[in-house]
Amino acid sequence: MKNYLQWIIKGLAMGAADVVPGVSGGTLAFILGIYERLLAAISSVNMAAVKLLLAGRLKELWQHIDGTFLLCLFSGILLSIFSLANVISYLLVHRPVPLWAFFNGLILASLPVLLRSVNWSALRLGLLVTGALFAIVVGMLAAVQLEPAPYMFFLAGAIAICAMILPGISGSFILLILGMYAPIMLAVTELQFGILALVASGCLLGLLSFSRLLNWLLKHFHDATLALLTGVVIGALYRIWPWQFNQQVFSPWQYQQQVAPHDLPLAVAAAVAGILMITLLLNIERLFNNADNGDT
Image 1 (cartoon, rainbow, N blue to C red):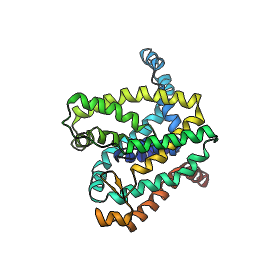
Image 2: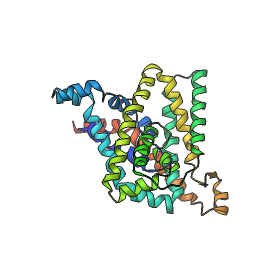
Image 3: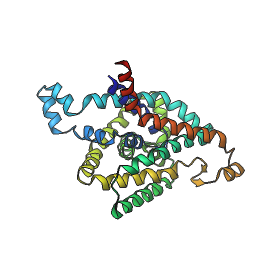
């Protein structure tokens, strides 16, 4: 039971990150140590799984796809997205600085854990820098404005989900660049099920294909892939710097002079809250184990 609750809580954290344009649920999965298991589980939805389904061997199918893990995780993600969409949309408009500062705290506090997970070499340091530069370039892309056709919801879902499971690249930010963030968020808040079905179909296609590539890379080039992904996470900090406007980065004081109040005390408090939150999430398994030992 404790594992189920841990997975749901981690799913809640991933869902909250996925709603924010600039933060990736994949980043949270990577930080929280469930990224490789998630990719392996998604990649197991293959022909072997189809054969088990057609043979009616449902119990074996559930074990084959790590069904309990996926169910708990995606339940948390969906619950978080539907419950927090309005709150985060409000914060993005009215209190963006503390929101970005919170996620900066999350990522900065997790970097020592990520860096320790790799056996470093010159090549892997090069991959780290490459990943960081890639994330910065993506973060500098400008958003477009368009009137979406139905097929674009499908394509947007497929593209965004690939970014969403890639640490450091936000699926929501990709939707923003494509001009699809506002229409999809409107569909979520107004429960436009036809549009949501198109987005979900695209997500399913992108998820099943891209997860296989990442899973293969982790199996064959584990530390090199982790180094590249860690670089992408570091580079993502550029996109979520709290004091920026129209993709221009400011110091807090420049921001106050040229854009809006810098909200510095609130931003510091939010960053500390992010640090505490990720520390709690990173130690959640130990906390559950200690609780169990206390009960016995």
